[in-house]
Length: 632
Image (cartoon, rainbow, N blue to C red; front, side, top):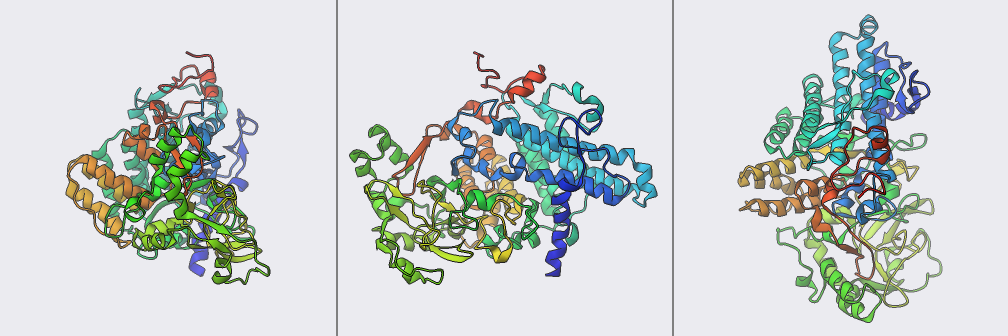
């Protein structure tokens, strides 16, 4: 227990820094613009430098920085969302959309904070030396700030770089003092190559001066491995697979990271990830009374039955679930176990043929096999149901079960085990938290009284998993606390689970991709199978071509990384975004659909915010986007 508390020490400092560091603004850095680290921060000792640095780390948790990065799986097709980043899925986002403007602004805030730390350490070198902080330690802190600056620029490029025009983003380094240069910050966009070179340079300095690992009291700080990780990812933004592979190989050479060998799902719950060497760089979180310092993972991915009564704004698509093959590597196919079952693509054709009416007789006939496999009906709430109810008590409330329950449960046992650890599967149990106690609940897909639609069950007291609405898609287990996580979660909006931005499994799969691009398909299979073997699923054969390798990589990155936000950048890198255009996600039964996806050539980059272009006329808009409503 002492080790865990020590590991949380640095995390706590990092997360509260935003409250302890003075924030500032314009000319005197006390009024304008908001939220810049103040020059009044005490950069006179190592403790002062650490406080300032933690202000740079703390920003990562912001919703429009990286705090909701997991939702990027939606724009890549692995997640269905409502009320969160919906515009990006429907093609209705613009250069004025809040998600766009806030992400741009807040990522640049991270750049400004990092630059300020570099400036202050450099300006106070003599005072720091006098305090006992030697030149080598000062250089290490500067390198750490450059890592964070490079990281924020990496994410600016991930969203806003335009590969068609070869444009990156406006670049500002520590030579720009916001206090005196704010009104002159009108740089045009640098080339994509130059921006990537700048990120690589920052990461190289970090790799040269930061340790391979920190002691437990400094858990969560940037390391050599995290620097090499972002270096490799930066190269991939321009599909430089050779240099990306070289960077990723340097992580392996450090010898400090290994795949987690415990229960796979433990990596995505409190505590286990802290001591997990697979995690190369994560957003640090801390929960419990008085420590509301985490991401909204429970809130946005959890169910109404989860701690706090959550909203499940992000759910898993049928397409993603169907990528979990059998343990022996056999591809999954619904028709092999339920003849006549239709998938989402086939449901879409039936939906179109029925004039877009899910309750029409024609559509209901088309989905009947699928719907009846899942649909259950429920008796009214039984008298005397309480928190002490048993599984048998709950099951007695089910009047009729889906007619393929037995076949489906048998199928689950044969599938990749990560599926059941990632999603709450219908006909299985889930430990939520209701009535101030951990609560075992049964997940079923319930049929509405009209016998044509899904029914939303109120699960807070009746023993069933409850969706936040009648959009019954697959729910997340991953990143959602089991019950109250032994008291570690006290606020649904601040989940005490560290969120991985780079972990070794991700790196191995990116290395596999690099090898495939180089035609080294044996090495591609080797690295894919490193990830597969640790969860006990069969090795993939050596692919015969890039297309075959890509199919394997798509499946493996879905099964391993679902919910970690990599789908959008994956689909962009693979040139596959347009394959999502016009697709519809249907509920598990097929009885509900809400919107069609829009994914066009312009979506390979988010638009530059209108306000930014209005203030800085030298900025060119991204390909395919209009800056103003009246543009042709």
